[in-house]
Length: 208
Ligand code: ADP
Ligand code: 5GP
Image 1 (tube, rainbow, N blue to C red):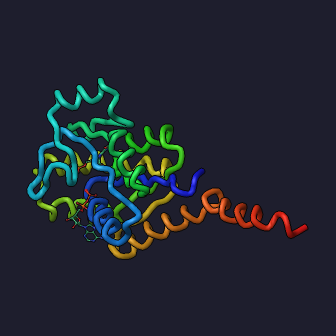
Image 2 (image 1 turned 90 degrees about the horizontal axis):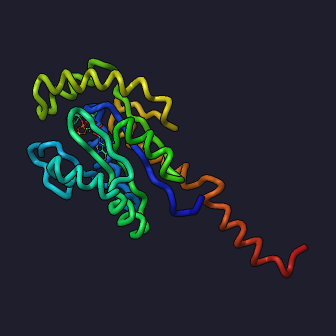
Image 3 (image 1 turned 180 degrees about the vertical axis):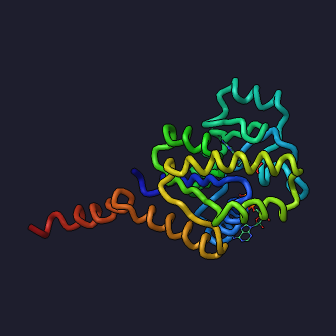
């Protein structure tokens, strides 16, 4: 484990508040950078390409799969989503911590590919709250809301895949919990011990 090799993988059932939390997290902490996924989903109002997602056609997405461009990809809610190797390299080269917003399939795939990542599952405080957040967001049709609720139950069953669970009831509490998890990860023995080893090396000649 190297000092600067942490990645943060966040999943949540749609509507739990993950996008809101990640936006706040990025504003609060410039050590982190969002890994912009590529998707075939249609843009929502207010979304621009290269910001929340790189939007591509299904043909383009398939070409990218063939080229081996993705570290992981999945079909989610009827659309393709994937994290590109190029995007991860861009963030790591800038010396930042990549934040991945992926579904449970993506988290499972990343577990076997990313050496050093922390996996966080964001969950709503109740089923009612989840449904009302999806409705209040006013971005999805009734059919999509029903599909997202069915998928939410399937995703909630996968919580054991994650290192931490954050219940997004009060937004600031949830945000602080995620920041605390990242801070704790950065203090892990394997990430910091090189500093102590450096001190021990320096003093080698004049101590017993
Ligand atoms: P996701 O990215 O997980 O699908 P969003 O971030 O789009 O979810 O949040 C869904 C809706 O819930 C949005 O309208 C957002 O403003 C609202 N929301 C998110 N977190 C909270 C919270 N802690 N309390 C109240 N509303 C929230
Ligand atoms: P939305 O369309 O609401 O932005 O996202 C729908 C779902 O796709 C969310 O669960 C989100 O985490 C997931 N998702 C977004 N990007 C990726 C990705 O690159 N890979 C995978 N596997 N899932 C993704």
